[in-house]
Image (cartoon, one colour):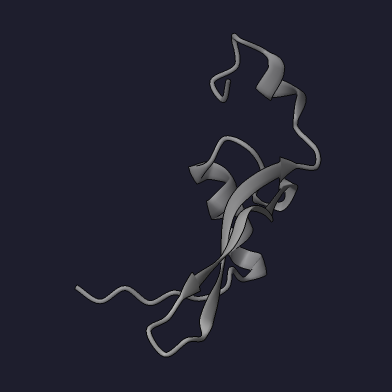
Length: 73
């Protein structure tokens, strides 16, 4: 099986909205630094390492997400 990744096209938005409970247009992924350090190498140099985590920011939510009786809650 071959999986090809591509950017979403405008006609894909409706399909994505049916697959996930909130609109695909309302999510943003932001990365924030958790830790920074240097890893010493055998040749005397140091390799800088940055550990990051992804945080999803919801910029707007439909009211149905706050309704426990809603199928998307």
